[in-house]
Length: 333
Length: 287
Image (tube, rainbow over all chains, first blue to last red; front, side, top):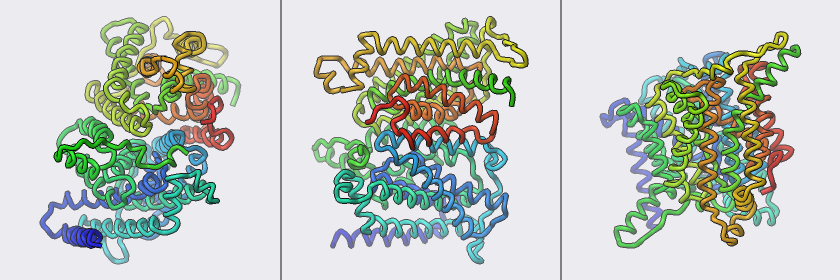
């Protein structure tokens, strides 16, 4: 109880800080990056639902995210559908359809096979965005995306949009926490830990994975729409394999299966990649090296790394736990 | 839609498929043996292309440049495996994420060293001409690529089926633990196969130069095709990689000709069909 109370206090303090942030004299550029952090945290949580709670390491999360973003961008610039709710609805719907199709194809296999197929599927969608110039603008992407007002609230300035992103994150977090704590979430964890046992108990393992896949796609698509508004530009890079990997790195950094932790991972990756790109042209090179270091030394997230460092300071040895061991038996069927 | 159209695209698809085979052979052998998904494989291809180009620019013979580029790429691949990847042999996800980190580093390193402009590669003078049959015009060089890739495939089959080392590879694929128990140095085989995969991709880079040219981002464009090849052919199967490369090469060629904007999407069809009918691929074994 005491521990729960402490975390409650931390959450309330964090929320108060998040609400106060734009009024603390922080430069507008950082407020804008913080909006990106909320958005990326939503995608990371959606991916965590699959990796951490269902045991599915999905490399096509960027495809869902990008589909949401492109849906909003194309709806606005080509079909003049400018409503706040309409764009979110379209983005989420397109992402869910993508998830439904991908799920049918990818969930035929498990483990590494699943990973390889989601890589291929993600890259096929990337190819579509890259080559279908008349629809997607090809490599030049889609520019001139204006943020729709929320009822009468104009979102074109960074501070207003920051609050929308924060609100969206809070809603997504609440929904996902409720989901993983529900009986449905419990079955998902069963599927992650021992699909064979769940099958023996009469659960349709495939169906639970499939539903989780589509729900995850919906949240990623939701984040994609927000990203299109945030960035006011959508390009093939937003649904490239590199972006899928970035999401997975966020989940690993934040801690697989933690949901809350994804905010930490998202914050670090967003501020690090933007900070690096401001300082050096070779930021991708450094980012690649950082990925390698994270996977080698912090596969169980920053919290795990902290614990190991603390143990070492106390003179005890603790080995890093490989990523696989954190996603349960579901990864191997 | 006449005979010329079909002949042109069949030959073009075979040439492109030949390059895909050189990439996918390493991918599938490495996966089959070590369960390692090497996402840096197409970056190896690009690295080979650029190293070969630099050698060509210094007046080196085309074939020698290709071979040397293969060796240099092999050295890079070997170093990555020997320093990092071999430590994570049993962790498929860890090693996969590591190769992605290295792919990013290779991409950006290539961009830093050679700049962002696309480089076209001239085929060797003896093969620079075209063959004319009726209204069909086909570059001689493409035929040479098809022939070379076919010879590489035959050599690899022979190597895998008829040599002692090939037997070690097959044993390690079938039952690694048992092979170890029989005193086979499986680890040494891992190093060699990974290096071989990088070597083939590196050679493919310059060899494919006159067809794909070389530019940053080419590796990303080849990744979906290479992965489609091993999914369709069956992960871990060399024959599968060969057949898969031909299928994907042809579909890609006709896709580009018929639906230029949706070419990548046409790849989705064979992938989805295979997953529906035979999830382990045409020549793959059940896991």
